Image (cartoon, rainbow, N blue to C red; front, side, top):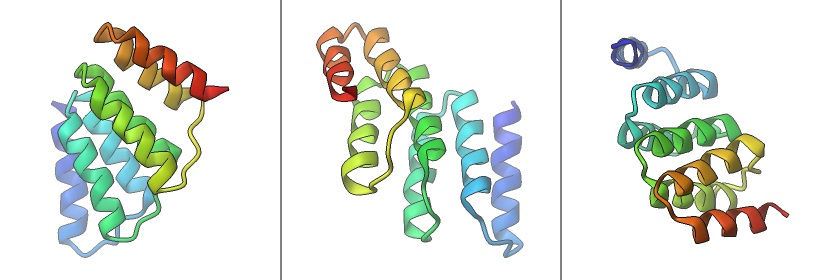
Length: 120
């Protein structure tokens, strides 16, 4: 399980007092996405805010993609909403694609159409 190794390395860096930055957090969140660990991905996204590390579209895209892989369409929609309204990060095509995919996987067509309309 490579995602576990990546998270272990990330936590080891923190334990050794190596300051985490956007890139290291994004790598950890991406590892969670690969391991289908949406809860941990969203937790790391929250941790970024708590330790004042800038979140970017890549941060949110990876977390939303993790939600997609777990068919957690509501969490994906919430992350998109927070991305825009709370954090002021602009979504991109990857963001919208991941959210729409999460809605589609759960057969939530109305939600997917709403996201499509928001893109305009």
